[in-house]
Image 1 (cartoon, rainbow, N blue to C red):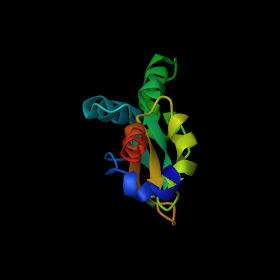
Image 2 (cartoon, rainbow, N blue to C red; image 1 turned 120 degrees about the horizontal axis):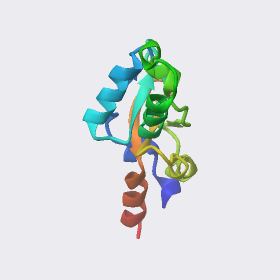
Image 3 (cartoon, one colour; image 1 turned 180 degrees about the vertical axis):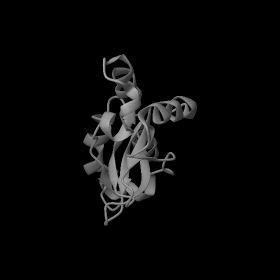
Length: 130
């Protein structure tokens, strides 16, 4: 079932990404207001850089470092991304291993962020195939 569907067919719109240069405190505030478990982080070029998870935000706020001197790029997690052209079977492991995130970033062939593959997208695809 999953091998016959592409990531592009199951992905959803990307949560509003943060630039890797955004101050960590601003990024954490945006994450909290979003209600999401994670937000994607992009480079100024639009390329995928990582993900700001609630776990990473909590760890940064609990650390002894001065949060004011850090950017979201300093505290982000680097989760694997999947290509929009991949089949869902190949993307399954990355989604299941995303742990602290509610999904994983989807990139186009040029490495630019183009979508989000939530864990429940895989479940919906499996249920639809039964």
